[in-house]
Amino acid sequence: MKFLVILICLIVNYLWLKDFDRFNDGWFFRFRCRVEDWASSLVEKIPLGWLAAFVLIYALPLLALALILFIAAGSVFGLVTMMVHILVLLVAFDRTQPGQLAKSFLEKWGEGDMVACIEFLKQEFNAGNLPNADDRDGIGKYFSKQLAYRSFEKMFVLFFWYMCAGALGILFSYISYQLRDSHREQQLQKQVDFINLIIQILEWIPLRLLALTFSLAGNFVQCFENVRASFWRFSIEISNADLLYGYANCAASGMVINSAAKEGVNTEAEDGEAAEIQAILGLLERSQAIWLSVLALITIVDL
Image (cartoon, rainbow, N blue to C red; front, side, top):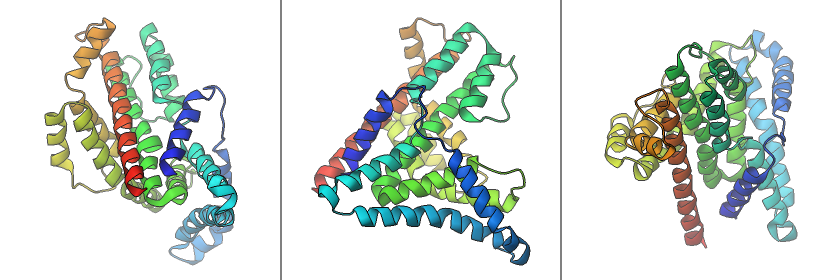
């Protein structure tokens, strides 16, 4: 059932109107604010009072989903359970396909409007520490890194934890990323570190698996050497976005030139960044196909 759920969600996600926001994540920020406001008195009385709020933020949605799955179990030959799984996965999935993100960015890039490119990064990635508008090369690399990491956290991480823990694994991942992104101004540093630790744990295995997939889908030698050098690193100080971008660059070595030749651009000029974006996008698409093939084989073996 899990492979079928993933396939249906990918099809729905691909065919849905790109300008129609299916699900608004704003509810989570309101939910988080209410729980933290309710638990604010504990923060002053108990040293780990802030942790109690986080436990509630995780526990309430997870318990609600577990109850729904328990009630739906076995109903209508499992179709109700499947629909719940599909809904949860669609909520967690990215609202925009990676290909559409790259297309929209490259349109602005091709026009040479770097201010519009920066506004696009702010809008789509909630980006901070952006390059200056006159740093065209830096803007292109920044988008490449964000494209790779967003595809990773919105797709590959979800695939992995859905296969391991079902809909509850998806919801746990979704809550973790929302806690990171829906921060409040008065958020404590220990809260930030706690969220980062959870995300590092969630991403550690999927990141290594995706890096190995990059090796198969791209330049095996360079990517695998990079993976082997950093395979066992684990720290909240490490940026998984930087690691993944490094793996993707190694895997796409040589592909940038081929992509540029196919598009008829000059890699020695500024359009080389556009070729890199296309190469990384192609790498992500091939990696997705590999993961889906493996998931299909796992499903067949389980049967």
